[in-house]
Amino acid sequence: MFDPHSRLSMPSPSGAPEVQKRPTSDIFWGALMCFLATLALSLVDRYASAMHGLPFLTGSWGTLSVLAFGTVDNPAARPWNCVVATVLASIVAAALVATVGTGPVARAAGVAIALACMMQFGAIHPPGAAAVYFAMDNAAEVARLGAVYAVYPTLVGSLFVLAMGRLTVRLKTRFEFTL
Image 1 (cartoon, helix red, strand yellow):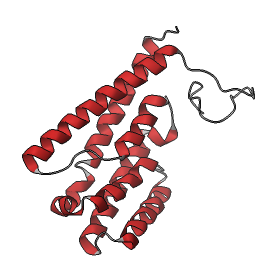
Image 2 (image 1 turned 60 degrees about the vertical axis):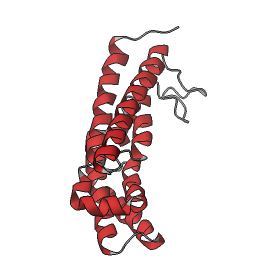
Image 3 (image 1 turned 90 degrees about the horizontal axis):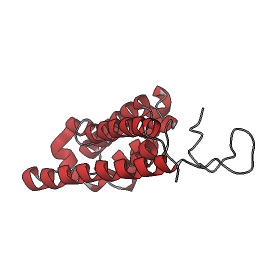
């Protein structure tokens, strides 16, 4: 059920008091691919901001990167959860920005509604809720994007991180080593 090398704060499947350690290669590949993915997203953000005045980087990709590059099979990083939750939260956020604004009540309602939608569709993905915060903090740009916000930047970047995460899994399993 869980990645045996995740070193999450839980006992190992055998009930041993210590969690299992990761092979050195998991740490190497995870950190390298996280760096490359974040660098690529940052460069796209620089271009999008300079050319179109639209932000691209969202905080959710930092937390998604920890899931995608740090654990092999974390349920929150599965494509269904990531895609559905991100799109739902983005739609909720864009709708709230357009209709009620960005005050504390809108922010709280956005996260709560996004959570309810995630639960309804069986797509719990904590980084998806960050789309609400991003929308509230970048209301003018999100208002310009409207419903497109569900695709750009949130879904596009999330899919990129997930794809890089899948590549990382292949590297971790094909080129495993321990120092």
